Amino acid sequence: PVFDNLDVDESYNLFNNEFLDQYYACFPIKHVRKKRKFVDKPWITTGILKSIKKKHYLFKQSLIVKDADAVSKYKKYKNKLTKVIKLSQHSYYLERFENCKSNIQHTWREIKNFIYDGRNFSSINKININGNLTETPANITKAFNEYFVNIGPNLAKNIKHVNGNTTMLIDRIQDSLFLQPIDEIELCNTVKLLPRNKAPGHDEVSASVVKSVIMNIAKPLTHIFNLSFCIGKFPSKLKLAKVVPIFKSDDRLLVSNYRPISVLPVFSKILEKLMYNRMIGFIEKHNILSSSQFGFREHHSTSMALVKLLDKITHELDNKCYSIGIFLDL
Image (cartoon, rainbow, N blue to C red):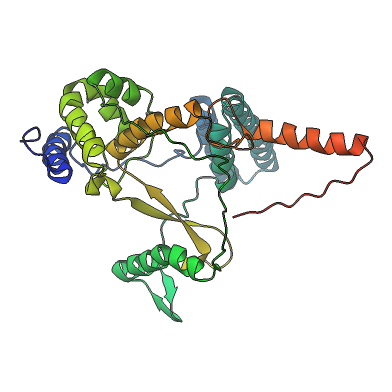
């Protein structure tokens, strides 16, 4: 049915329904209780656990005997154990940061884990809506949704219309962008490059699972994605995002103090990457982007932008001129 359908929405829906049936059959949701003792303190080793038990024993003995020597023995052991635990914690984080020093994303993740010390601020139990506190999940969800979807339109209302040419393109490109059809080999290679830890979307489908089974689902996906290119339509279900409110600062009860993180399904990211490869190839071939565009380009980075800025300022200083910088944070 997937191959017989020429409507990209219907074709993807048929594929998605079949895929999810198999996915949830293989990965049913199970509720498991687990012990949380020292789960947030991985530097607590088996040896330290034994020492903690001995410390508790010495403490009980000091209470029973009520002797100065027993109390002194307990205190000395406790102080020594505290130093050992701190040293173990220090060694643990030192090793963690050493292992991720070449990856800034993992480094920041470790910093956040260290700062928050296992505390979870993700759950939002109540919110202020027009001066009234509500704890109903449906009302909280609706309040966040209304605020997030109206951020763009509300900002657009306050932007004055500007007449004239605002593009940075020097010349118009006469050539057309041809969307070359996808084959199964390109699809599989694209999926292999996806990070395994990419967050799942609203369907909860894991990127690691898709990477593992891509050879088995490449044929229907190739048909769907080529159909999308052919008729110029992105499957509607792939536009559905799981939106997570992330707290910024100030009052936690105000929706305006949260920013939205939108997580799309894994299949959406695959189609997006395939389209990106075609677009960026056309853009680079015709040299469309400005030489001052450093972000989101291969072999370009913010470091290069900084070097160019520094070079410009140094050049002006050598010529005994002043440099004035205007920085816009949009």
